Amino acid sequence: MRKAKGMIIVKSLKEQVYEYLRQQFQQHRLQPGAVINMEATSKKLGISKTPLRDALIQLEMEGFVTISPRRGIFVNELPLAEIREFYQVIGALESSALQAAFSRLGESGIRKMDQLNRQMQKALDHDDFDLFYHKNLLFHDIFIELSGNKTLIRIIGNLKKRLYDFPQQRQWIKEWEESSIREHQEIVDFLAAGDSQSAALFLRDVHWSFAVQEKFICKYYGAKKA
Image (cartoon, rainbow, N blue to C red; front, side, top):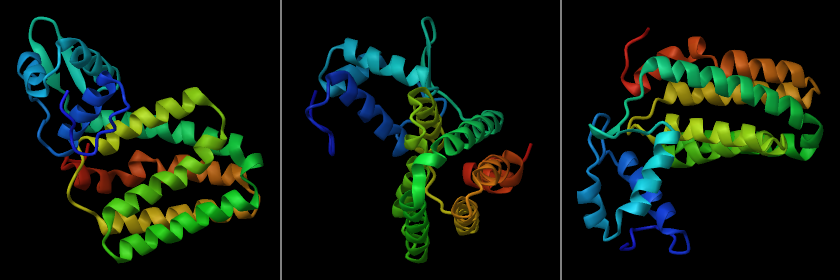
């Protein structure tokens, strides 16, 4: 396979194809409802169909595509009902992760979360959405990783890929980002006070509440309210 920009050559061929296809999603070159032609794609990449098929199977497992033996391979939509389900699942899992990780967080972990939230504010002040997004993920990853639950970590990671990586929007909703920073601060304050239960409940019932975030979600994904 020809080396794509930014692709790490030590990855397996299947992993390289997987990353290439995700880039196509992120760059809006593969839109919801599009058909992926295996013959044309394998020729374009200069590879056999085997690594392409393996990458597509992984993407199907993650919900990005649907493989139909008779009809072809289709890029999936991301309907509002599915986003609602993702929020419910992520909220429940992150809440559980936060409580499991609390004893391992310590003052240093809470301080790091606070620093990341401040860095998110700086990124917002400079209209740097990519940096804001990166710091936002790191904020959550601190306690998710400390939970020590590999299955939980994998499920949350897959769901966030689906929510954030595709369809990735070019718009940036400052009101939502500002609200997210305030919510993060609430979580940090609860943790600093030693109240992990309130922090976990706030994370689940506010930060990852579809009902609370619905107006922003609809605007970001260009969907109508349910």
